[in-house]
Image (tube, rainbow, N blue to C red; front, top):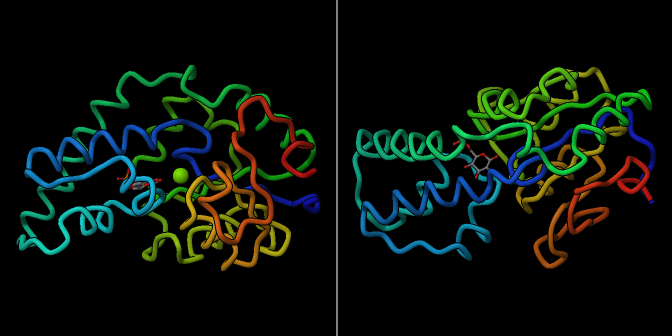
Length: 215
Ligand code: BG6
Ligand code: MG
C-alpha cells in the first residue's frame, strides 16, 4: 500500500503512451543504416528511459565516430522518430489515461510529467493532455538524465510539493532508480523482473483508477 501523495509525476514514453516502441524502431533504423547489430532485447534492457546521447553511445560502443558524426546520427534518429510519431493522436494515449489524470486532479493531487525526452511537449500536444498537467519536466529541463534524480526533483519543484510526498511512475528501471534516489515512492509499470527498487509494480496502467495505483 502506498501513501496518498501530494503529487504524481508520470514518465511519458512507455507509461502514458507506447512511444517506447517508436524510439526502438528509430534507433533500429539508424543502426541498420550504419550496419550495427541492435536488437529489441538490447533496447529493453539498456535503452529504456535513457537519454538520446547515452542511447547512441550504447549503440556505437567500441566504434570510432567524430562529434560531428555523433550529432548527425542523433539528428537522423530524431527525424526517424518524428516520422513515426507524426500520426499520433489522442487515440494513442493509454486507455483510460485521460480519466485517470482527471481523477487524480479531482482528488486534489498535482499531476506532473518527468520525461527525459526533448520531444515530450510535442507528444503531450499530440495526445492532447497538456491541459491536465500542473508541471512538465522534460529532456530540456536538467543536465543529468535518469538514473540521476534531477528530473524528478525538478518536477516536484515545479508543482511545489516536497519530494517525500511525491509518487513517481516509470516503465524503466533507470527511471525507478531516479525516483528512489529523489526520495520518492516509486510505482513501476511493466514485468516484475525488469525492476530492482520499486515500491509497487503493475503490469500496465491501462484502465486503472487512482486507488489501483495506491492499493
Ligand atoms: C525517454 C525514452 O523518455 O526519452 C528514451 O524512454 C529516449 O527511449 C529518451 O531515448 C530521449 O528522448 P528524445 O525524444 O529526447 O530523443
Ligand atoms: Mg519510459
